[in-house]
Length: 253
Image 1 (cartoon, helix red, strand yellow):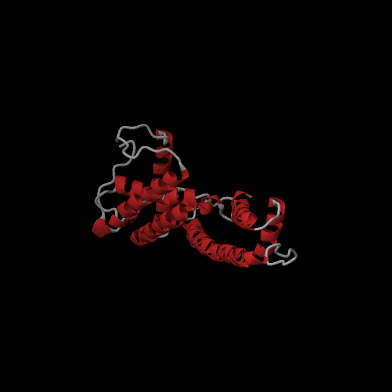
Image 2 (image 1 turned 60 degrees about the horizontal axis):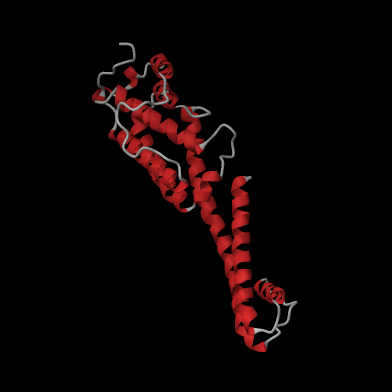
């Protein structure tokens, strides 16, 4: 409920802010109490018309209040399609990924399924699409931060885990077969962590902007070895396009 609550609170904050502002503007020009000034400004803002102005010379304040009420609600209505368009683009790509990466998404599974179905030559196009997707998410989710709190409709799908899975597969392909990995994999990896860094910056999440190669990581060797077993099971090496095939150094020799 966090994301829709944020939107409702945002609208109420705008309306309450204007209501107080117009009440404070009206108060000095009329011989009325502040409570009555708020009644007049609220009546004008919401175009209800139940409260008559005490001072006829303050008509310009009432007109301004009425106009601002309409503008605020119109802006909020226009705000929603923009949010939904960004949300829809994000989730469409995540939904398409399910057939390639499983649910929840897993990086090695992307390479394994492409090898199993003979789609390894399609990986350059796949990574190019996700590079553009990461750029779009970086732009929209840093400008409209509320999108970060809108979850995927499906319980086992997450845009963040999907991005990490694609980045994992790109990193594995580049590390295990550097001479045959497509350049799009490296570009996607770069755009992926750029997207995550931008989002971390606006969200206040601390991160190391310049990590050292020997810094500790959360991935343990057993997990890496398990992913290698999955790729060997699907014979990923033999499915690398022959014209670009290079040596693969599997874990354990």
